[in-house]
Image 1 (tube, rainbow, N blue to C red):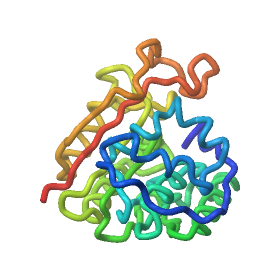
Image 2: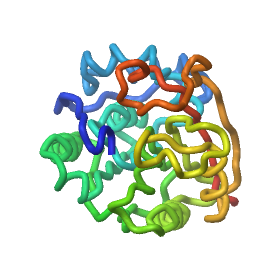
Image 3: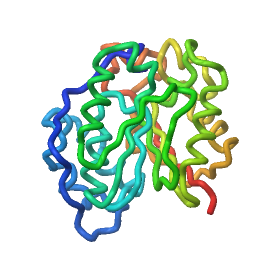
Length: 251
């Protein structure tokens, strides 16, 4: 939960626009129109450079017409990007866990605003029981996987969520996870206090659920981050080193 569940962006309720040019989805330039779409806020666009949003969408192989789930949407930054990128022929499921909604009103506001978008449906189920629809092309989560291991939640929460993701994806579907780097070899020890997680811990957990590691990228890495500070510390906030992992459900 960002800063123990603190943060949300201002949202817009504009309808998402149409699809992208016929460029392979792995090409970041394919997403220029989506990132300029009116469904996204000016605040979203100001963050695109540091969040490498076009490159992230390319890494996740997002394409018009897909069925995508944004897992733990926070303020809805990626929900809005997906809504524009998949276009009117696609669909986005936005999941905000009930525990987040109960913790802070801004999380309720974010999921309600997402639910108002033309090609987005919201789910508000408990964190250990995500009610994903089936037949998804992509399940995506950014900076929140470590939340599955926070003390208030059950020790088996991550395994339940990963199993639900596996069941919801179509064969060949992708599960993309972005999170803040912890010190190598630290496992889960930084999840509660620093809001970080060891990349190898994530790989172990997700492959144990049946997924195959399909790719990883360092586009969000920052070699100057010592990985020992809380991600909300002023010395590193907004500039943490992050990993991006792409897992695939076997065909």
